Length: 79
Image 1 (cartoon, one colour):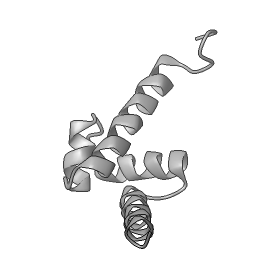
Image 2 (cartoon, one colour):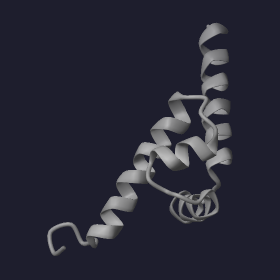
Image 3 (cartoon, helix red, strand yellow):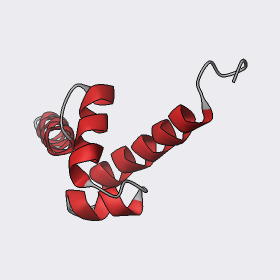
Image 4 (cartoon, helix red, strand yellow):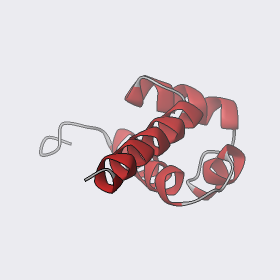
C-alpha cells in the first residue's frame, strides 16, 4: 500500500504482533495460547516472526516487562 508503505499481509502480521505484545504484558497465558489467539497457527513460526520484529523471543519479552515492572515498583516503594 502506498499510504502505509507495507503490504496488507505485513500490516496484518504487525497487528497480530501488537496484540500478542499486549497479551504477553497483561495476561499469564502461555505462548501457545497467545499464538493461537493472535492467528499464528504454529508457535515456532510465531516465535520466529516475533524475534525478527522485537529482537527477542516472546518469553524474553515477557520477562523483560516483568523485570521492568519489579524495578519500577521497588523504586516507588523506596521513596
